Amino acid sequence: MTVALISGITGQDGSYLAELLLAGGYEVHGLTREADEAVTPGVVAHRADLAVEGDVAAVLSELRPDEFYNLAALSSVYQSWEDPVATARINGLAVAELLAALRDLGQRGHEVRFVQASSAEMFGAPRETPQNERTGIRPTSPYGASKAYAHGLVGAYRAAGVFASSAILYNHESPRRSSAFVTRKITEAAARISAGLQDRLELGNTAARRDWGWAPDYVDALHRAATAEHPDDFIIATGVSHSVEDFVRVAFERAGVDDWRSRLDVADSLLRTGDAADQVGDAAHAREVLGWEPTTGFEELVRRMVDADLALVARA
Image 1: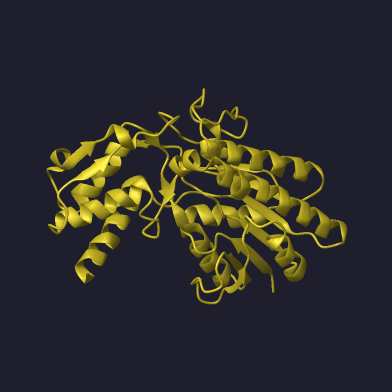
Image 2 (image 1 turned 90 degrees about the vertical axis):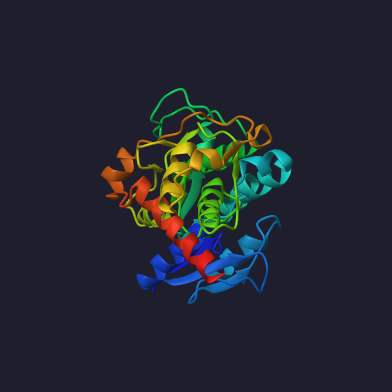
């Protein structure tokens, strides 16, 4: 039985990946910061904190998994400006520790296939559209910089013989997305306004354009990267961008709120420093090498999120 270890097991991507691997007959283990955190049924939890030196390396040494997916991160661009040191530690330095531990295991005869969840934010304000694996890395936030450092480490350790791939993930959503993310904030507001529980929605830059995909598709790409013949860097994206305003429109229309423009407030206080105007990825390399294709379009994923939030409001 193939043994997989997932950091970030309690997040959106971790839960979908765990379900995918369990359905494929894997023995799945997950890292949690607290001993009592809930994980996907069937997953064996291990308490380990990426911020504590040696914690995760100890689990790797004991478990000796066949595959390791690093999905854990401080993933808010806004929060990365508030605490850049913690962001650097979790998103960057922890990856250095993980890769060193994996190299040590390999030198002792046990290869672990490692996949790093990288981010399109490391491109910052890109000079070319769409972005591909050769696009210049020019981060414009502490979050993007931390992800860029980790991405560089993956390439360095791959050159040193570690099976290390970097999946450069563009925005990907689902009903399991945390309310801290703007997409879930939008769909929750649409459902609550539809039910008369909320009057207005306040957002920052509604003109920003992002390449949004369906989260289960993206964890499928992570698995394909882990089981590929050779490790590499892979852009995972749909190739189509939409504005935040587009997201609001589709969400509110799905919830039956036709006067969505009059419900929307734009606040300067919510604008993000260094926010890219447009991010869209070219996943041709992943399509060719991994055989990966997105299955769910933008409007359908928004509708699924709104439907889930409407159901939650109805049960409340």
